[in-house]
Length: 485
Image (tube, rainbow, N blue to C red):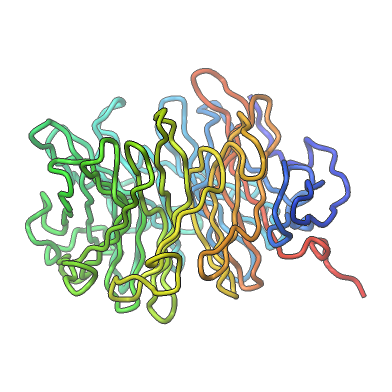
């Protein structure tokens, strides 16, 4: 079992960094296949030749994944994720990196720390002042079911005083008895937390899924009893069910504050089209949880296409709100062919603040583009000129052929959704077929794109040996190493 933190440069002999042009195979090690353009060039001055890899391997397990890259006060970054033990229980894993992507030895143990909370599966994290709020699922038994969970730790790794139980955790059974709920995203504003995810409320067919929200006091983790309309099982909770298909499987994946202060939630709602789903965005009032019926149609805006032979699966993975209130969405618009093969497209859509389509963006405010094979959208960022950057895991992006490796792939589109205007795919070193996912993006003040995620190093059956990763991408490969007059 490995104990040391490895970086990609310690495993590969790097060549010189050459500029990447459209249709020309990149020569930077770690970058694979043909990249489009030069706007997503690996910054060789970051980490070890452009890459940072952090692992937490110990006697408890080897499964490490980053869920969020967060800017640190001043310079540098936080990588927040999990270290999953062989017993399938996550420990919160936090590392601090300096501005150049190297572990900051002043934090924790050699730049890293592990914290036991009551969260069995870590899904998301945010930093508010000197606190990290983390959400996910708490397993009631080792095999489930599970309930929504929220934890709080200080930036020094200590439990937040007065928040939750002795492990700084609050659990919320936002599900029918014996079924499961979990939080996938978390927001904070004005001293309140909003844990947003999914619940199984049951149904005539036994199981179903709906979107769930819990509002908590950020200091104590107590549910806000003034929030909710009775749709949730507890005061301080609400459940949204668009019921496009009765007792269907509806999911929340994304959230953001709207320009007017409402909360937006995006995801997928099962429809009547075989395995199909409609993408949606809903808006609700953070004060009481009521749908904002002035948004879209009765609080919802839906996205659907008729591209597939048998079904279309449309889902919203990420929401970005501009200063003028316009709403940008990224996700997937998948469909099948006559042989039931699923073809994966990237969904981009733009809405006005009231939920109506933005004219001039795509067709009717939305577009979907085939970028790669088996592409699963992970995150989205927006650069200073409005360019849209989407991260995805994929088995090869155009014009490259299929590869069994699952790559960290990034595609850039212009502000109107045209493109891709730039692409890059990255494989980290691995002792098995490379697997990875670029789970989190952050565009810094210098217009550089930070890509956090994980890479698979090995597989110790039945547990993967994976590590946290961070890469920085810059425009124009000619100047990726800096400019010296």
